[in-house]
Length: 138
Image (cartoon, rainbow, N blue to C red; front, side, top):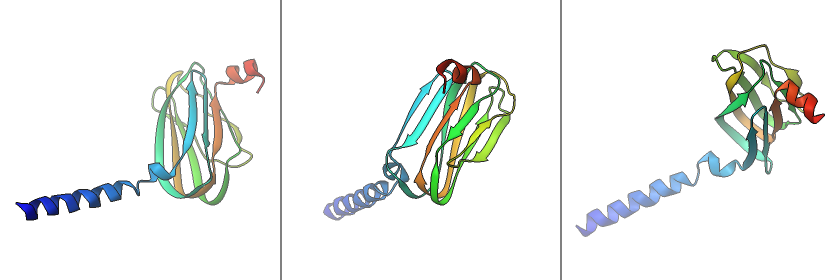
C-alpha cells in the first residue's frame, strides 16, 4: 500500500509540474469587453507563444474597425473576426500600424479570435463598431 501511495504522490507531482508549463501562466494579458468596443493588451512582452484565444463580442454594427500597435520580435499575431452569422469578415496579421475596417457582416454576437504562432513581442489592439469610434473621437 505504501508503494502505491508513493507512486500516486509522484504521479501527482509530475502532473502538477506539467501544469506549471502551461502557456496561460506565461501569457499575462488584460482585456476590456464592452458592447461595441473590445480592447486587448499584453501586460509584459511575451516570448515564443503558440496558442489561440477566442472571445465573444457584442457588435451593434455591421462592420468593425481594427487598430493595433502590436510589435513582434518573432512569429505572428493574427486576428480573425466572425460576424453573428459565423461568416469570417476579417483575417489579418496585427502590425504596429494596423488600421483596418472589416468586411460587412451581421450585427450581434461576433467572435474575436487571436491566433499566436511562435509569437514574441507586445500585443495591443482595439476592435470597435465604427459608430462607437465616431462617438468617442478615437
